[in-house]
Amino acid sequence: MTIIVTGGAGFIGSNFIFYMLKEHPGYRLVCLDKLTYAGNLSTLESVLGRDDFRFVRADICDREAVERLFAEEKPDMVVNFAAESHVDRSIENPGIFLETNILGTSVLMDACRKYGVQRYHQVSTDEVYGDLPLDRPDLFFTEETPLHTSSPYSSSKAGADLLVLAYCRTYGLPVTISRCSNNYGPYHFPEKLIPLMIANALANKPLPVYGEGLNVRDWLYVEDHCRAIDLIIHKGRVGEVYNVGGHNEKQNIEIVKIICRELDRSEELIVHVEDRKGHDRRYAIDPAKIHRELGWLPETKFEDGIKKTVRWYLDNQKWWQEIISGEYQQYYEKMYGGI
Ligand code: NAD
Ligand code: TDX
Image 1 (cartoon, rainbow, N blue to C red):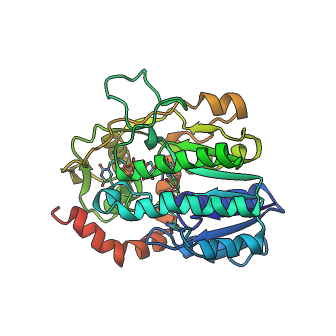
Image 2: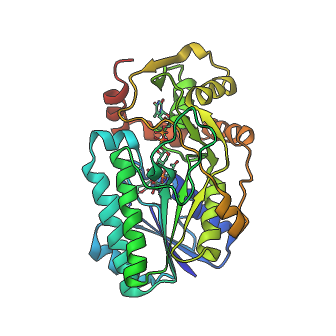
């Protein structure tokens, strides 16, 4: 079994590669990644020399490079993690989100059609459903919830999802889609809420909470997401969408306070800054379908997962210190320069 994993030098893709190499001895994993600011080859250091792993630097929008790789590897499956993934960056500069997230997806699926695969899996997000009101805790996103996006990022992901389902119906491409809630864990890029707060708290820098911090996200430990995708690509029904989430809703301000407690830092570091434009209020996944059909349930409780994550950032300072120098520094100044 050969699987091309796109975006495997990023947060979830790298965790997926580690998970699959551990769980499926004998499988060959081929990582195709452009190494944008969010992709780090150092993340994959521990597997780079293995016979059952190959890294190829390429853009999923580059048709020639993608076809060359398919011709060489003849993959049985493709799992597409490659994306521009940060909502704030999409508000600043939407164009690249449309290119990678929509056009890149079509290039990959064209190659799948040409060379033939058992499965094309699209890693999507709960953000395609838009948001839920804060005063209706009884409401959840199901796979039938209409797509109703808020940001250029989520719109590009929804556009890709529609294209994936269209390739299934029009060309018979054997596709599946997973829509997961917010992930956290090792190798999370420190522009996202949890790793940014850990890095700032360790440096005794202000902790920038957008608005009142009352927006709610539904957090899932990254390995639970990887296990869900493993189940879907092997046992999921072709043409189906599976929501992935563990009923673990928290206000942003609660998350930041938990991190302060874990790192023994004062909550006085918290600073309320200007709200995100179009800020989604609440995400909450109903995971009943993946539980019913594939038996998936999350294994890591938030209380344990956040401790493991904080520990990982303490033990791997070199990894993220290198990342937050360089180009990221300019982004940080632009976003948070005033505080
Ligand atoms: P990430 O930003 O950490 O990693 C993205 C990776 O894709 C990087 O390695 C980057 O170099 C690569 N990439 C970007 N553009 C590329 C291109 N044109 N060609 C090839 N490679 C390219 O993202 P992540 O958080 O790991 O998210 C992975 C996927 O999961 C995304 O599709 C995202 O929409 C989805 N998702 C993320 C979350 C989350 O909480 N992070 C939740 C649900 C779904
Ligand atoms: O400095 C910050 N302060 C703050 O209050 C940052 C970076 C974020 N926030 C808030 C905004 C959100 O309400 O925290 C919440 C989480 O923000 P992000 O980490 O940027 O994640 P989110 O916008 O929820 O999107 C994430 O989950 C869904 C991923 O980045 C997406 O790729 C995924 O699809």
